[in-house]
Image 1 (tube, rainbow, N blue to C red):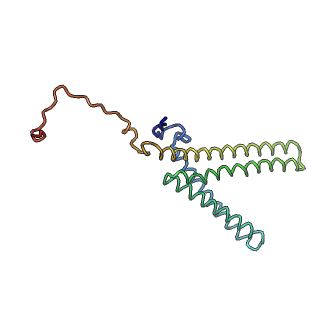
Image 2 (cartoon, rainbow, N blue to C red):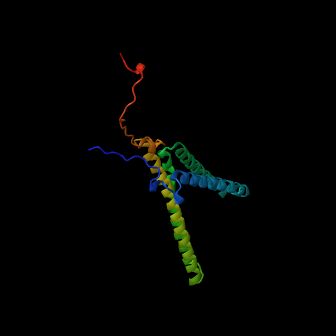
Length: 197
């Protein structure tokens, strides 16, 4: 049994982002946001490090921070290379990073709820803090899931495009057109030099 893959259609619903943008445009926009946030965090850490340079705790903090920064730079580098060169395997580190980001969000939400239980405040104040923590946590999880879905769809887009029978040709609509030759009733005579002796 031969399995035929359908031709690649970039306008398929899975390959559209919010507001009917192309998924690759959405993934590149999201990668730009991640890059700006990473640079911003790196720039904010420099003054903090300058303040705390005499402390011994700052050395261990610096090592942990630099490890995370190098990991973030490597992940963003793979992401950008995968998006620009359209290589789906280079998007895998970002997909793993997106999955790993779910864990701290949930842990912070649970710790926040547990800390309000042990606080010596009234029931109403604790309930308000718990509700806001749960709302922020749910919003963060949904946002992270949306980011994961965008990068996952970009991965599928690139993979399907590269494995398409047309090879990701941009002129797919023209290639799928059918041309039918209809003979004329009175064909034109061939020129004399076209007739072979």
